[in-house]
Image (cartoon, rainbow, N blue to C red; front, top):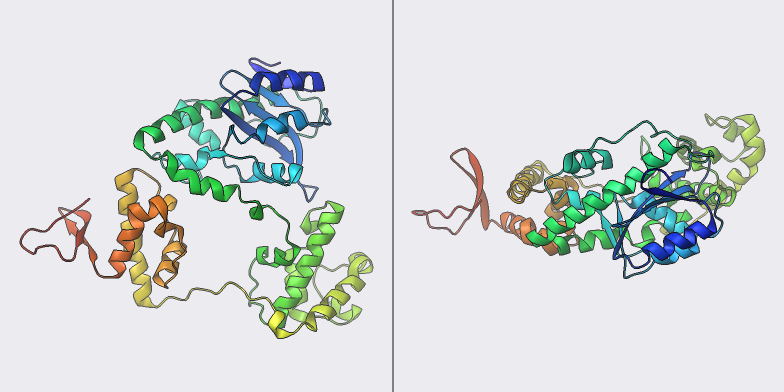
Length: 396
């Protein structure tokens, strides 16, 4: 044990911890993991905190984490995380499902006068006045034994998270905003975000210049799926199988012979000996796919100058409403969201729920010409177009 943190490295100690925390209404959770040399993240340390306990659990010395996982997957207990996406990926790979319900303090912070995507250390300093030690940011968490400083560093990731959660929840309840986050948290715990879909792997590849099209995209899709499956089977990083730029060059050139493969930059002779024949088979098979089976890239939004000006005005309205409510503008809408709205999309988050009530309906009224932006005494305001000319009704 270091300070008030329990280091759990035996099944007996884990059982004692589980008895202590199983009746908690909420549990703060964080993980330390490594994935530089693997496809799947390797869980190296699991930190939890409740109102009266802080612990670091060592999964490298405890083979069976089920007693703790059963608690973390209990739907009556709220799991508190900061920037939960990567941690949730680990839990998905552990059990094929996600712990619910969730409260993400990074998302909540955007409703409480903080910038979106705020880091944990910055949030701790701003809310609690505590500067966290950054000395172990690059620690190799696979190495054992862990020294007291490493454990203290890891424990701090949940120790202060507990205090932040209690404060955030209290403020959000007072403001009547706690339920606003339900949809955001539900999206984070959608298992489709974490499931491996090899045939969709091509979508993660940075867009090639010049862009691929037609049958080239079919080849890229097949090559990316082949790489994904190979990386998954061997538990190796994708880039260790083939780098993205090699995949795009192969899809553009579509070589049919070993000599053609050899002309692709980055395909060294040793690598060609290992995977050359497989690559040729994948390319040949995907080239023969019917055109109706070719994947289609997400359509690029090309706005006219008039539409771009509309998006600028909408962005000003979003910033105005965000300022009025003391939240980050990005929490309401991104420019990409507004571009979609201008082009007629209806299934956009800014038009639904609390976002719709706060700014989405006004955005629609702005587009319909029923609301306008105006300036009074140097301040940007909104005004209904139908307001009396003698006595304008300004709202801010």
